Length: 487
Image (cartoon, rainbow, N blue to C red):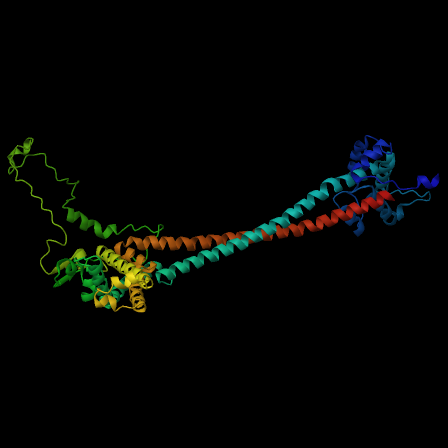
């Protein structure tokens, strides 16, 4: 029977307190007793001897029964001089702590308190700390991922910025100036394209002969290409009138300022120096007051000044003459759009590109047809064709097509499209600069955001470093309490 009583009983930690109360091992009002004990402990710790182990015991978050037992054992050594012949201590410190131990042992209050501590550590304190620790670790992973994403996105935006600059043909160090410099080189590029148009003589002859033979077309074919093949990149005036201008007055386009004025800078002008000049120019005399140029007395020269002019007087009719720019200019003088070259003028340039595309489509179709002319019908159809058509081979047509495609590509590339836009509207430089500047601005914002993520990740790491010792300490205290209860 004695052996059965010594067998251990397995009780869940969170149900230990309920088990002690149900089995009457502890009083139901143990919390009131603990409240009294806590007051006596708070009073007793105010007067303690200088001992390192006692300092460590009192530095804990919560002093329980087993701590009090250890303090009593330490006081037996420090307060040995106050022990009388009956084995009692006259020291008030010893009396206070012995009373606390006695109160704990009454009705097994210490068991209820320790069971409550164990249940709280296992059910609440431990899970809460582990949850905070897991949250800090998860936050580190999330912030690390977002930091990498910000860095990657910033690098991608910068790459897109430099790719766009490369398409424009600039380095990107100072976008407005570089774009304006490209526009200044545009006439040279267009002049080279105009010179290379001379290579299209055979192309135009072949296309003209083919349209005359197949469609019996007697009208002009590719008029602008024919003109440019002979004259190069001539002025629009010469193309329109057929005469070379003696004087060319190109329109002056004001360049955008190299450095835009920021919003933070306000130009207040120089009022001190310009005030007198403006007043004198306006004809205002400042003496005792302001002369508004209004007289209340009728003038001698104007007899009707004292009355009202009803508009009955005869007034000479106003003649309005409408003059079209570039038409009523003197002969031989090219102004406005007439002064621009064929490839600079948007109207003639569009026609030039259209005719190049027309020639490209013709040559492409001719290459396709020449690959299928093995049948008898096709051979008989072209027996009566001019020699310029019959003498062509498929390989030669391909070479002619490559020349046309080269000219077309040089005029319709993305870089040339932007340069034409810049030439037509100087404000386009500001828009392009703003678009490119936004890419860099977004990249800088992402870099700052990545730095913020790194700071938050470091804070989460510090939080983890602070929580890990607390979790280990709580686990150690819980195991120690469990051992003390079992003993």
